Length: 352
Image 1 (tube, rainbow, N blue to C red):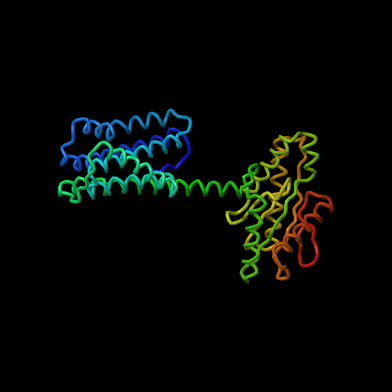
Image 2: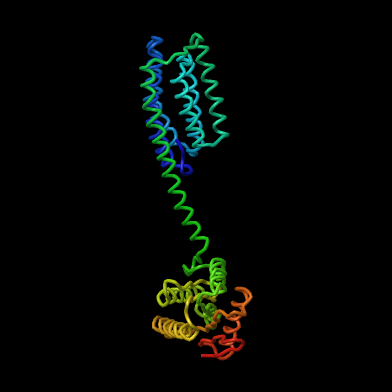
């Protein structure tokens, strides 16, 4: 009866379904094991309560407690105790006893691992001890054919149910892991790659270019006088400008281009398999559209972009030296009047 989550009703519901199935199938196993011993009516009543009433009581208790996981651990230990009790009551009939104890152990491993498995074994031992105090100690070493067939449903169906639950949990956890990985690599404000994720992609692109395949161009984009925007219009407007730029980037770049927020008001783009002149046109168009969008939304808000471009060159020793070229080009764009694109060509700069 594994749990895929923390506290709450969903956990109690999952365990309720598997406990109901397990104890219903287990009732047949124990009932056939006990029937040959002609037990008194109170034993049959106890079996019926354990098999068909206890699952509902355990569910109601678990869903009303503040800590569902802890409560369900207690419930599972009680299940183990009952399993040990019925093993002793059946006089250790081999197949029903092994079936009962192994199903209980499977539950304990699934929800708590080896440590909780050991706790379950202690509970089973206590159950056996109590049954030996109540019933005459004995050992029945032969399992009848009827008892064998009574054990088959739980041996077949319950592991299938438990395996299906574990599979669903694995799929769910894998989905959560992918979501968390995406969040860890995404800038929360812009929705683009964050600094670390973009740098990882830059390293990969550098290795691709270094391997002799087609080249690429990287762009560093800076919002001109962004501090003045924040100081004059407030940080809410500043965040809006950042979101507008990220939107323009997504709308005007190819699916293969990788855009990220490098930090603050600085953005970065990798343009694979693009010559420098084409990259310059793309960035110039992007700059014009961003300026026009900002002006259309608020004519008093003067916003522009300075952009530095650097194509991959054989002389780059690593991705950092490539990025330094783009940073130098950005510096040139800002120092020569802003609102423009500057590109590195060889060891020199050219303003566009």
